[in-house]
Length: 355
Image (cartoon, rainbow, N blue to C red; front, side, top):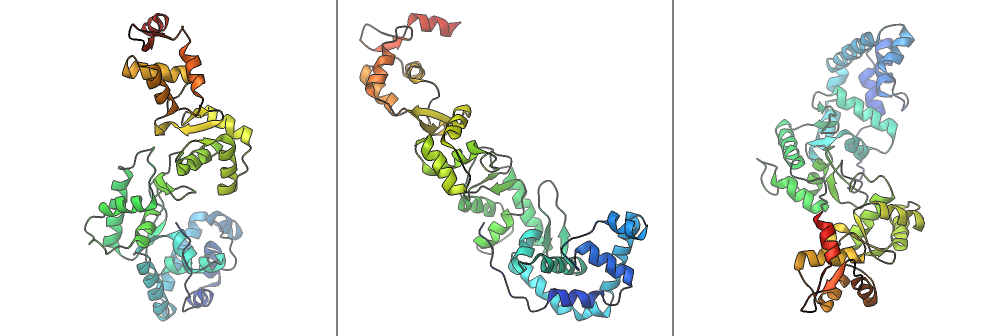
């Protein structure tokens, strides 16, 4: 998903935080500043703060919770109502439910400023926090009804994407919108729908912007083989391993040595050697094996075939010279001619296959 534009806030997060904290006791203020990284970007744990005061982490948690409650009851909180309303409007404009990372990145580039915005989210009673779990990322919402519908739609979507499926962003958005029950068509625009997709940990996009299951090697790209698959999938036709290596380097800024790329392609059954150094994807219909294996499979499927029929069929699957096919046809351990002059499997091979 493309990086979102930043917005101009009508308030200064640091100044607002300072006002919200001003009536607290020194220790309570220090706990909140440390926990939320308000003095610097580093956030302290309950345990580390507890060690400073020689108290338990649970006691630190109690101090934190009590301090947050005290802020919500203070005059400073009432004075900050417009600020909370502004943040609420931002979340609403982003769809009503948005991942924490995306929201913070949207409002500011600076990590310290993001910490102060996060502090406002926790303090404000306008916002609902949804904790990260196995299916969804940490997220904030201001529209409970829509949030539930988005969650349900994503749950349905998770069950309708197969492990090998690779979809364009547009296709995935349409799949999601088809499952967003109770929301009028056109109410959710494509940008918001894309944002909703990023709430999920089950589906994700790969470096080329295609979507699928996060567990799939087509999405969670881990090495040369996966990068090669994406390059060939995008190309749409067989490529020489040297070209694949060059494209990996140019597209992903990942150094791919031709020899290493060749070795990786050989080891992965997603790829089929279709000519001298040329590879195609198995999913395109290419058969694995050497030329004689391809001929054997063709005869198995179609029955006796003429020389011309075999040459035509093999050339659709392999980049090689006709003479190479004829040399393989002359292998009497594999093939022979019947009374009509068409090629069939040899008696020796037939017996071997029956065993």
